[in-house]
Length: 370
Image 1 (cartoon, rainbow, N blue to C red):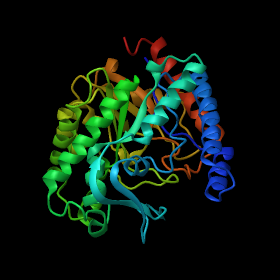
Image 2: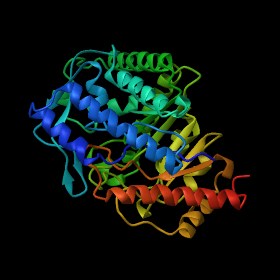
Image 3: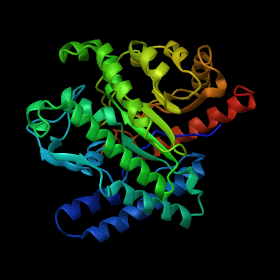
């Protein structure tokens, strides 16, 4: 079995300082990129040494896990908002998106970033087929516009023409997929907090949404997008409940969306959060067909970790609902979905990776996956 990881890692101090200096005009973009490259090189080496098979740039070049990607589309601009996004007990930076013209994908900066990642990997003699890129899902953009955002300011170009909006989003993603594949990319992970929010009854009531209707719309929309993804790309989706400075947005079992989401979404892998009581039990796994379920059994939000035996026991409970051959493990989320990072120590993130590697090794030795 291969150890995977959701994506983001804590930003090194030198990188945070470089961003501050760049914002102040003390260094230029080329100097910033050089520091980013150095930090990513160190991260790749550390991840490879720790036993993580699928490697990414740790999202070290980004400010947000999702907004940076949308800002890279033509037609979407970065805006300052009056308020940030509300998490449990905290409000984020007040930044967002505004659609000012037709959404399209032309020379997306993430593709240049991935090219640099491939060059760094080659320099370290790491097989580039082990590299993955994480991006927000197509349905996340709908969620950002219609549920999580200010509809009056963020949806002013398309008006009421929802069909044209959806078609342009699909076309933009299709172009991105094809350009990613042309670079030699073979693994794309779609990150998504919409489905996790739909599992939260309080969230749905507050936003006056019908979870069943939204789930059906988003799964169907995602499947339309996945049809356009080149066949050689392995696709994954991370069903997140929110991650900002160790806080979350939603709670609730996946059971509310499982039949439609797990039963019908045509991805190769599901990254799912099962790290605490907020996540509910493993029964929703029974709706997964032949895909891999990457069980996020270890929190990325705090320094504390369960024992190896406790984590192994959780995986074995999950196997009551899913074939062990379809199970992989990871942390519940990334360590730094935004540049602020979770409120944990740097050494803690590596201790957690080491712990997962030990769990995986012991389960393999016990013949669990065979």
